[in-house]
Length: 515
Image 1 (cartoon, rainbow, N blue to C red):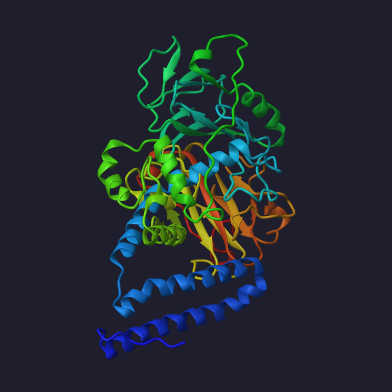
Image 2 (image 1 turned 90 degrees about the horizontal axis):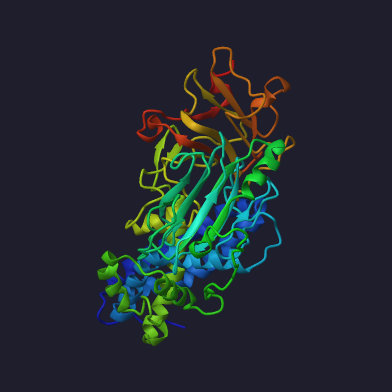
């Protein structure tokens, strides 16, 4: 089969453009060659990349073909570019539709996957460990209490007992993945309390003693509850507290013995595997269920031109528009994933990625809201918790077999009002199996040894650093890439304003700490 150059494109220009495409293909081939070693070491990851690459090549040709031939279908290309923006805007709605349907209706085969009816809590029963395969970057410090809550008809009252000195928090999240309020030790105090979760437009009165939280930005919200667990011996105490967490629709509140009805009737997302236009149909349904804010009206008028918006049907669009929307959803997903892993969102200090102060409430920054908040999953406001990430592997500040050390100078420990911890994850974002079953280390670790001058040295390596300092050992993978995450709960002002910075992770023979 041959392709004839169109008469309206100069041959020298066409030859130049084809040369650029050939160069791109050549670079792709070189990357493929370099990936051969990865294919031997990590066959699953390499196979997934190969599938993505083979799927992307036809898409790449469709993208560059109009520029090479001079034959641009304006409707198709406009629908595609506008569809990309609509996908970035709407991704949190699509993602949360899937998450809600899975956690409310799909009974899991593991006890670490949330599963509860609407307006009911699912409680984690044990800290995550290396057997946890379905949660990316799990924390090993707290037990989760998670609930999907429907505020479309009336408020729901969140109740908890007196929590004493224990750290706990309930993060309240709107359907767009933005946090809008908190109940917990930092914001409402440790004492027992009843807190009204109020949806948009509700104007009634609350019973005496019930405190109102901020008005939710959407009729549906997600609660991420966390309760600190101080080891295996503490789990029964945490479970006893969890049993006293309540979600009560307002009309049932204060009625002794009144049972809260549970239902699992939630919108079922349309998956792309079943219908290539499924993500858009899901988005339109979610926008109807959870109306966007009024100041987004001008944006939604643009999206309506291609059938995106509450009450609209993408099937009513012309065929070329529908095809462009299918392409926009496919490339949009890849765009979000690449933006997230790029680190573009972060400020890097001593090799640590620092999140921006807007994280948790990116609002109208739709790209970061989708990629660095919704796609990542559960993201706290910095005032509640700051997470720093340090990556190890090719192209990073640290690579090679190690061992490594993280040394805090005397008086230089992470400044927090709750607690801090370090956790290591492998290249699949999972906790690392190790002979001592240790997945995190921090200020609550029993037997932690301080240096002779009052500093603290954490040893990171695949093997034990020696019996005398093994209590300060955080195991890491023996090869490949891995990430260490520093979590600081209720960080002090010097963390938030950048006056305190975390020291670098260094090769053990270059570190002065612990000598």
